[in-house]
Image 1 (cartoon, helix red, strand yellow):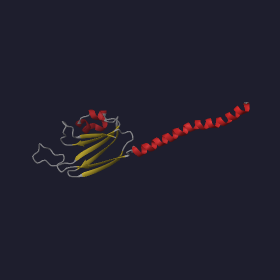
Image 2: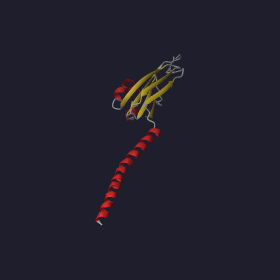
Image 3: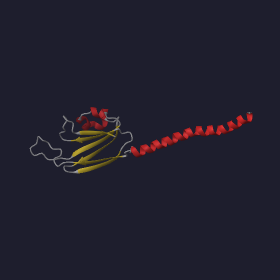
Image 4: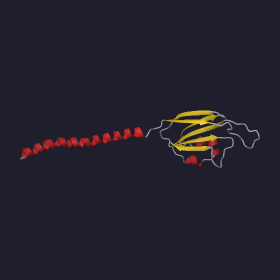
Length: 154
């Protein structure tokens, strides 16, 4: 009788060890499957690519009779959070945007676009960026409708 129970124990012990090690193996397989799923269906964007095209009548002054078109500066901000950006007005961004956004600012670039011209910008997208803001620095911005700014989640 004792011999039968020792034989059963000797057979069941390796089976139990195999089952317990299989739990860790299953977890590793499921983690690998999850990361493969994320790699296929949730593409990580590493480079921010923006194309700008300007019209001929760019950055004009409606108050002048013979207003000439002038280039406009477009500033791109990569931010950790958008709350501070949403509270700022045009004049603050124009004069001290980098200082006021310093806590959330990850990267910024300026692009100058001439009338009827176009420009492209490629910059690395910071891993911590959750918001990308694009600001047009015009001579006389429309501060009523805030058409000088745009933003998107990163």
